[in-house]
Image (cartoon, rainbow, N blue to C red; front, side):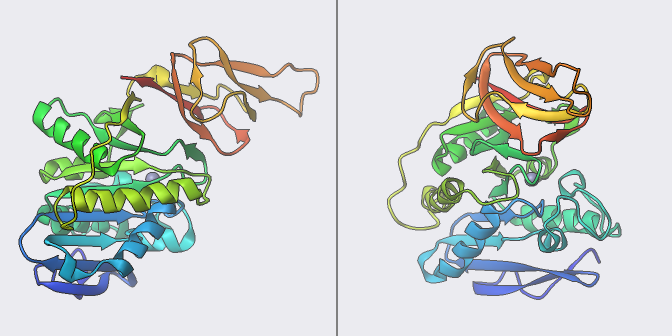
Length: 320
Ligand SMILES: [Zn+2]
């Protein structure tokens, strides 16, 4: 058995319980009442990303099951061991949950958790939203994101969900970005779930603005889907920002101390220096200057000064 759960996800009412895998348990909340769609909300896939964890736990406390039509399943700290430790990978097996999908029923902890999310949560869902941030090493301009599949109708429905959530920016991802396969979004796609994710801050801290966006976005999502019967919010069409091309990424070419020369949200031009890498251990050496490789908007920057070859210093998104 991949995981055990002590509530019935197909039963009506408000239920708060635990998903258990080996000796670790993770809270899960289910709200079901009347006819309507099923929405799955997750945060804490990476344990050092906090806005979503706080906003989802808050929603689970405040939501009155009698006010909803449909079903809302909430896991505010879906990767419990990583969230408790405040780490990106899961401490028990060192794996990144977002790279573990589709997972295996008989795999290690992280693999079984991925399998549970895909086969027990997304198999029941019509819609999903997953909450991320930059973790300890990156800081994002708050933005929703979705994977562009080329299926025009599905892509439009994902974009509508982002417009319902209401963040100013929405990043366009591919099935692979910088050689890294998307994880939880691919699980949503395999299970025919219309889903979005989002990067709402970072530096392993909570930003008040990003948390406010998550709180408001969740309420807007619930009313947009008709799960809460107040008038649906006006869609806020986001500025679509493409982060799929390789030249969006400014990468450290050597060891050094990273000095950012631009801020999140700045518009930059290709060729303009955006970072310096200093070598204080070699006082005679001039810092290495790194330019933007495309015209675009600064969507993320590295949070840590100390940098090694291959580290992402900036993500410059291209307005689509
Ligand atoms: Zn994350």
